[in-house]
Amino acid sequence: MKSLLLPIVFLFAGQYLAQVSTQVILEVPGYGVLNGTNENSTYTERPFYAFRSVFYAEKPTPLNRFLPPVPKAPYPMDEIQQATNNNAGCPQLGAANEDCLSINIFTPQLPFESDTLLPVMVWIHGGGFSLGHALEYLPNRYMEHDIVLVAIQYRLGPLGFLSFDTDDVPGNAGIFDQIEALRWVNKHIQYFGGDPSQITIAGESAGSASVSLLLLAPQARGLFQRAIGESGSVLAEWALDRDGRGKVASLQIAEMAGCPLEPYQDLLTCVQNIDPLLLDRAYQDYAKTDRLNGGLGFSGSNPIIQVAGAQRIIESDPLELFNSGNFATVPTMFGANKQEGTLVLGVLYNGYLAPNNLTEDEEFLANELVPQLLVALHIDDSTGELAAQLTEKYLGTAVLGNFTSMTPGLTDVRHTMCSVLFLKGPTYETTKVVSQHNPNAFFYSFEYEGRNSLFTYLFAKNPPPIPHGVSHADELIYLFIYPFPSVPPGLNNRETEVSMKMLQVWTNFVIYGNPTPDGVPLLDGIPQFLRYSSAVESYTAIDDVWRSETDYTITYTVTVDELNPPVNKRRASNKQSERSKYVSSSKTNDLAY
Ligand SMILES: *[C@@H]1O[C@H](CO)[C@@H](O)[C@H](O)[C@H]1NC(C)=O
Ligand SMILES: *[C@@H]1O[C@H](CO)[C@@H](O)[C@H](O)[C@H]1NC(C)=O
Ligand SMILES: *[C@@H]1O[C@H](CO)[C@@H](O)[C@H](O)[C@H]1NC(C)=O
Ligand SMILES: *[C@@H]1O[C@H](CO)[C@@H](O)[C@H](O)[C@H]1NC(C)=O
Image: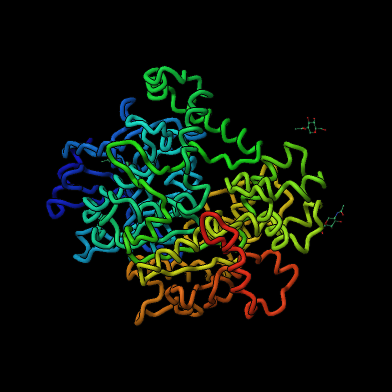
């Protein structure tokens, strides 16, 4: 059967393609021959080609399980590789196969159809560095536009991020996977109609933290030309295990998986050979216990500042690296969502407050909760002064001790806390520091509340009593196709309009390095995105009506403010003085929360 079809492959321009009903056979010189599919875009049924489960690296072996990946060896060119189905994902709950270092490629045109190569967006999924798959990101909306979309997979959880600070287990394996995927794309994407000199890295949450880390990683320099980061940064406390915490957590996870801690050789042999799901389950148990104790449950499954390994992603503090200008100064577009904090608050409620019977404990809620949040974020507040300031700023109008009444303030405090510490703050901070050396830094605030939210899906079994608002990850609903069971399904007319506008802005950035370049016609209602500078602090708000705004830090108390509208806050003359007050109380950074 294979040999019957092969002549067709070589009939077309010697090189590219044969179409037999819905299949498409593509020869990728130096790599192999792929069998993909023909599909259609969402809005206009524009045809595109899909190649799924294209491997960029070999399956990890015990010896290199925690090391940078081995590039995929080329396939025999007289064989056809099936690229029609999704890979099940890297080992995590529900996926066990380590042969997962693959990408999905979607393109509206192949080289036999046009001489013009299209800009490429390489998508890095989120999921706290421990969950997620390429298959969740359906390309049918992006494929309305002239870009090639590549969704990559990388090792997750302890298999991607275990670190003993030794050369055998140096940490950051999952980030090395991302870089290897980028190398593959640079080498081969031209055969899919993509332009290797116009590559945008893009990601959400842990994917966005990865993007910011790739800006710093010397190994990734030159492999991409622009960067999009949605709701996440390596500057966030949850996205990087500092101060040796990665090693401490990794040893605990190994021990929980049943490995001996000593001698080292036995520990190493054990983690290199153990069933990947056992190791992942040990991480899940570790994370659950950590959350029960008021922690975040991310350690041991996070990037680290490397002190071992022949290759190292970063070797010093990311904020220092950004400040020094030693990073890829490509155009960037970062942004965050209006109520980023509700999802984290939901995790806190279900993982900590509820199981510890604290949801109605007035004494705890009034006096202990905020200090406990600081402990979880590894902030030293021995004097209690910062906790007092946070309580005043975010919970000043709440009935302390009543969780319902405290929810809006906790939502805000959770997503910003301090400029370097959660979702909004660190993402904005990234734009601020990047802009010191890069004139093309853009920032957006996603504020549109549609009918669906990722929050509802994630907490379907056990919904915490928290209004979700515009939750973490909700912008994905409009860019991709909501990959989860959703009620109601699809988008209504208003949501479709938001989706089309966002897709135009995002793909403009991929194509031009600017969301709203001069001379490119825009859909109605898209204002010009102004570049961020420390002088003007411009950003663009995406909502029913899109707005040009300045000073994003004002939105840090948005949930509280909407309940208790402040008087003339935007013109508040005490803004600077209020900010400098918090700056002085920080030991590490400007705490402009
Ligand atoms: C390509 O994949 C399709 C399934 O999508 C299958 O029916 C077909 O036989 C495959 N072609 C080759 C040449 O393997
Ligand atoms: C794509 O659209 C064409 C034309 O409307 C249709 O014939 C074809 O079946 C569609 N393909 C898929 C995979 O939906
Ligand atoms: C919480 O309360 C329930 C029911 O009163 C009790 O069974 C459980 O042990 C309590 N849990 C903790 C951690 O105190
Ligand atoms: C707690 O606060 C909510 C919202 O402000 C209010 O509706 C509720 O009555 C309060 N509960 C108690 C026990 O005071």
